[in-house]
Image (cartoon, rainbow, N blue to C red):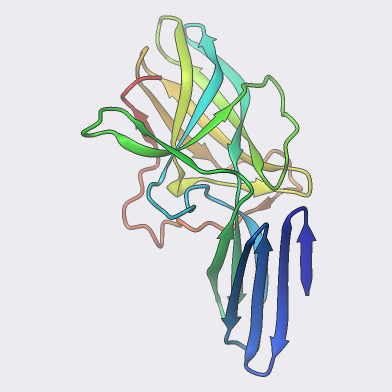
Length: 227
């Protein structure tokens, strides 16, 4: 079996003791031996905090243009987020991650105080009023459901998320996730992921950071160091 798309090539070769997994991306080549006589290969988008290594569970999306929202108002906008692709082997009631790669570059930043702040994967995005077109192997669409519970106008420049409970859905044309962002003051907000695909035909991606594997996973991220 061989899968090719743009600069990516994934190949599975059968031999006597199992399979050989070979993945090529630009100048990078990964080869692994899968010691099993059976199993399926699952390829789907995953939580985008695994490359070049897993150093954080937080994603900061920086808006290229700030969003100003009226008091006690609800609004929906769309931004893009980086896509990482996970390769899993499933069989005998379990599924294991064997490879992660991405066409999106990796940058990190600090959100908050230098002593107590949070290291975040950084991604810059335009803000859209409708679902934008994306490079599906590089970018996903995030629907942001904004709720301003404060009684004053609030200006937003970013959204910070805990991806431990990120819900990703995908189809042949789009990678998608939905977030609720509740604004409590000019400087604080809470964000959390919603289990809602863009449409019924989308598949739910396999999660790496499931509640079963993560002992403590907050359902929300509290943005206390500014919006």
